[in-house]
Length: 192
Image 1 (cartoon, rainbow, N blue to C red):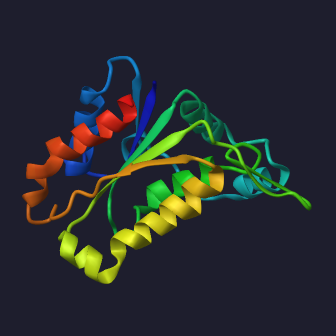
Image 2 (image 1 turned 90 degrees about the vertical axis):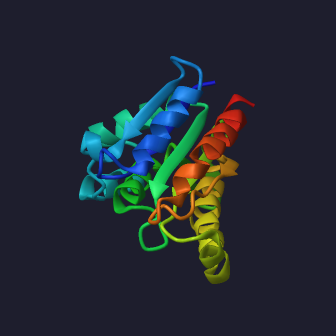
């Protein structure tokens, strides 16, 4: 089972990148690819070319076609990202906007409704939160992320939902004590 780990953090020394690297090391060698969106300079801006692709359900820009090919090689997708303003960073949102496209990730047809296109894929998330779990629960931020990404993106595209493992208290440094457990649980889910 191959896995694509998508990382969204601008700092090469971030906990986000450390978690992604540790997860990659916990999975079978040769079956993991890391898409480090910031390091690779992925352009998250949805352009007129992307709008055209949406309207025709194909004719994807070259960089989008390359990312689609990455996802196609994977059985599992793992999103590893810091929580910025109670959501994912803009580069990850732009990656989803541009890559999970009409004609591939889903289809839209007159009178047919939405046709999910990624039912063969499972997805897991590791959101890295600066605050503690109690704040997320009290404010509903964990449920909000599950709704926004799980329902709004994964379910829409037919992706099977895997685990979501929050790493809380990253700003205080307390999250580091929980990385091994989170990595092991996600790795176990990927290995099946």
